[in-house]
Length: 639
Image (cartoon, rainbow, N blue to C red; front, side, top):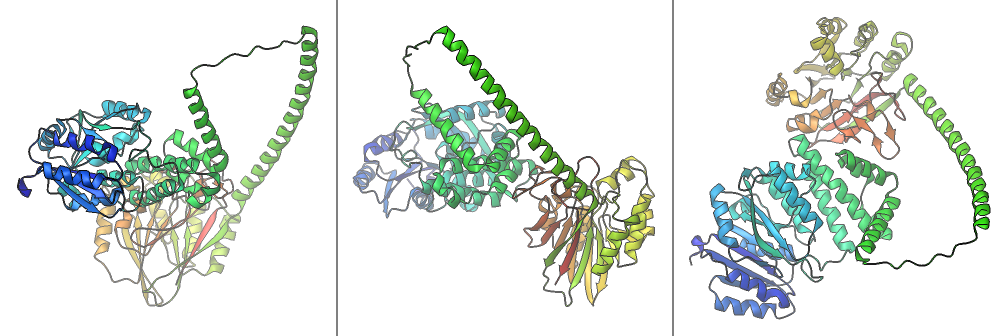
């Protein structure tokens, strides 16, 4: 058969499976499909596998046997893929086998939809709870033989809480794999967990078929997938894979899919930590903050929080629960032991005495508990009061190659009518002492539930006497303009000396340097609707500036849309620092990202290499008080 006539290539990595190899290869030779090539990759196996492969290659012209030094499963698969000629490729583990009509059925399915990936069902020797759950999700959320995009398939699986990543249950279009550089990561275990999400994110046409063609022998302890014990190499590789996937997922759109993918990683990180031996857990590098930020679903967030508060206790508890379940499953029957009963009189006296002792201990515990509650309440009350009456100047350092002179920027956001000193005299005095070259506003100076905002107009007027002032509107100003009909709001700010940027740019000459400030209005979902996209595209063509600053009220605007464009510094607010900030864990909540937001306050580096600063803001909207979260006046020195 000519190479160009091959329709399906079956790639079989082979290592130490002498006992099962014959069954596997015989099932491939029994395929009622003529346009087939079988690639046997003997991966330095120390037994008779190489000899068996050569014998089969002599018997059947469709079989080619390759011999190479041992490099692992990923390396053997890549070796076979590089030598395959078929339009589609199947990866078969050498200790499993196929149904006789597998290739014919899959080819028919592939040609009907010109699919990039075709997923089918697997037959397991031993029932699997995880596989059963996935099959239920597939039946509920997908239609067999229908074409889905890879991201849509991922979304459906993750929403159902059951994503299977086994490569052996899929057939891939070879050109799709090669064109997208989809090869297996060398030198790691659990390679399918790294490969399959990448492939699905690239796939445009994915088909599910209800045929069962692959027999996976999961009953043996020495199979390719079961021979790897729960050891540190296995767990460490999984963590490395999840770290790489987390970086990949940052660019995934839509946002909901990205959050679901990260949510899946959250539990996988916890699972690795729990599976590891206590003495090795620190070496894994599983960060509590990452687990919390990745968690998206409510149930997963609760587990992530429990893990973050006490990782070792949570891991030990999970291991105990797993052991208990294992014991219950193995226990077939139990023998009841006879109980010796003491005399009723003695029993009643003992119960009475024990009751008094329990009551006394209970009252002591209650007294301690109430004292602790009062202590915590007092501490919280003081913290809330301090956060309503004080603020701090938070200094940031940013470098710029183009600037010939350092520039200082003062950034105010989310003031919400808050006053520091009479008529904000203390705030204005502090800003004056800082000597900013430019003052920028991040929105939400007002609160949509309060009609009077003269104090903010007065603040703007005083600020404009210190330095040039420009900025954007926040969601509270938007409510006043678009829902409450306060059309004079923008005019009043501009009359006070503030340039309001509504998807537009303003330029300032500072120390013979041109500083360009772009103000983007609204939320990420508004990007293509109200002029933000046109503004960014128009400014992309302009390069006559030494420093470009981009302001958007909502911080998630930057990773979702704005980082695709050129600027040096991004500024945002809106999150109020997460309202509550937990020690070592950071921000607790934001409206856009939910619990443990990634952009809850601080400094970030975007994909376009720009620096993003998310300010905690100077006030709050009155709904929730700040706890352990000091209001912030941001001072950025650009050197």
